[in-house]
Image (cartoon, rainbow over the protein chains, first blue to last red):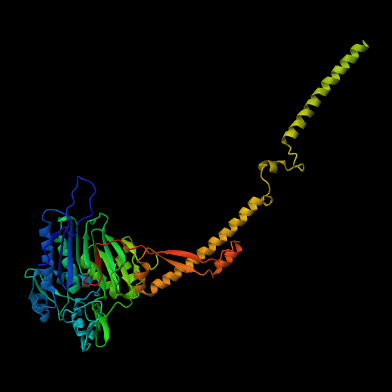
Length: 342
Length: 160
């Protein structure tokens, strides 16, 4: 088991003085949801290791309930007959409720029903995404689902029955990949409450930073260059905040002779976000950070500044040429940015 | 009797003349105190406001030389500032051109740009009297390296 918490791998900044002792951080790394997950507890208290185990368990439970790459998962069983009622595990039930709320607050821009569009582009299984685009030979199913998505269909209106924890998805199957990870980060962070002075949960681009970090002046989060390389384009300092990035650096592939990516605009049924390569959103809640990063991405370069300002969102966006811009709410959190010269 | 009358007349004349002489003396003394003998045209108040040791600027050769040097240096600084701005813009264009070049260029502590001196700065140099046509080396500070980070936000599924 790779996720067993260890101590000492990331100790805090050395403490000057003889009266204080340095307590090694508790850290854990494991894979879930097709991502590498990292958990860190700074200056842990008794029970921190157990809390980290609980945090890891959250990811595995959410993945088991919400994955679309396992035909036997509760989500895929419900997706197989979305027009029927299904009793589902609490992880899937809660995630569907959150997804429905996100669909409402984004005026339908966040829409889990893009699953069939993704499948029509050949993204019907976990693909080996890397810095090089994946080529799906012969893929690109007829655009029936894309036309359906663009056809002005009604908003998503799933039904829930709390006593039996049952759901009715509606006529179409759904994909909960992004919001599922955001919710897992939220619950894992809750599992770490009180485990130490500061905690960090990071899951493939989504993270929740609690406390003021190892050095006491905030958790430093690098914003990845969506084009290439390991050098960040900006560095954020976060305290009691979460962030998420929607980027097309990895999850893009060629299908039917053209390049597509996973951020589907439900209004067009096509990959969206014209003029953008990545959007990062800082929010109080990791799931909403995930929802808004995707929704702002779909606003495209022309619309993102107004959309972020309208919602008061702390957002940072990067164009395909690497140029970077940010909303007013984000400025106070950016402690460094690459500006090309100085 | 005649002697007595004559003595009285002399004393009366003296009594009349004394105040006149006294006031005349006081007047001339006051005039002499407040009057600048260098400016007999009556511009006493204006002269009094200017310290006597100052002379007209154009009359001091040292000051003239200093002013000329100051002017020349100001022109030189202005020309160099323009040149630095041009070099910065050029560096920005180069940095924007290739991201791979970015890493190699800024991995060190700084980079230098050597100017041929063909811009308008050279004419400024000539006018300043320096006559120094040697190349000007401008050091462009490398951008500050990003601070150490605890984690990264980026593409989901990113393998680090």
